[in-house]
Image 1 (cartoon, one colour):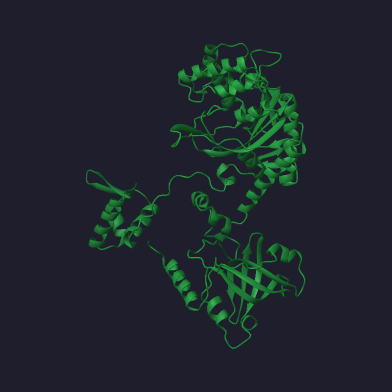
Image 2 (cartoon, helix red, strand yellow):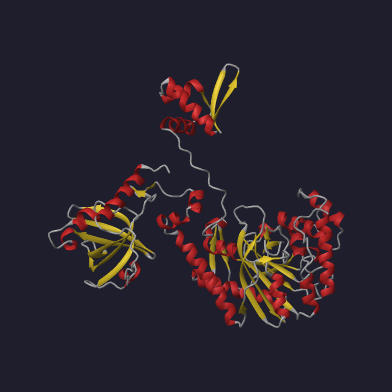
Length: 563
């Protein structure tokens, strides 16, 4: 393992601590009785406190030092005085352990008295100091100059997501997003529990990937020698529990879809689904708007939220617009009673990319997504979807071409999806068979399996039921003003980390010159590098071997570019 100079020095300090008889990773409990926030909020001059955390800054003043300690709730200033910490002749704890062997990022425990500095800052005068954990890598700490400008900030998105543990330490504001995420789950759970509904768990590994139209992840069960699918939705299992006699069940589920990744999609995501017996989609619309109003207040203290350039208000009630009316409003085209061929031609005329694998439902979905979806900024229920779009949804009581379904749109994105659930087992089988025909035509989002056990459950009877699904990741994005789903996931899916290349100083020099100005004439680049012919040749061969650069020959001209 190639170590940097800083990493080598820290390992030397680690050994020095051990030579002094200090365990850099002690096993015993450290008796913390205050957090930084508690110590400051309950400040009393002379009050004894015990805290622990990371050393984040250090101002050496000779026989004394001011240190900033960071714990889970913030930062607090520590004052180390050599003679207070070491009242006897032996000053090793201060001069060696603290001053020479403690680095920024190390975990320490302190005991001391609270006091106010001359400038009025609540601080701790340390009289006992315990080493708790030695860090072997330096933190990428940002620096603020005299003009208030931040330098060396840890803000590269890929590094932040890949090393979230570092991101949380050096960018403590990131924690607020995840604190709000936890508040959202708690608020929603309390709302459901107060209503008398029961939280349940259903299988993640399923023999049939059902309950949604999506491409699943496939794995293999060795003992049973069968393929299994990671859950794309938990809908069909929750409905089985309604058949079994529960009046209301809900689950926060990890779902997995083997599809694209972008700013609003991660292959692993969290959904909430709830099913309530003897209700319909009209009841569920009112329930949903009251639920989200409650959650917004619990998370942000207000029903209002900012998302990008938009101010969104989650206060109930929300507007209701049928899908037919939405498409008519924004395209002038009426989808009512139209054939597949007519819908196909209309979509093409609107400049929407379509193909022969798409059935009526998919075509309508493409028209709505391309021409309507982005216009709904405030929370709006889009209702009464065509039957072809909703294979698990009950036929509309007033129009057999439609279903009793709504989606909640916020800032042009779907946040929730709900139905009056289909409980006619014969109709459900016919819908599944129609989906299979679409799959055979090449529609990779159509249901490719018939869940016969679910149909059998329906044949035993499911009461009238309404179901709701909410994308939890997307909802917290709106409540915390984050346009990227990666910002609201602790550990978003990432491409495999590229192996760090061990470049020579000469190779790094050439790469640096090319990053400043790529596509340079070979002679000009060599002159800029000021390397001898031998060093130049070795560096260029090394870079070519690593696949980092290439030389383009055009007649008599040779140009060097980064790969």
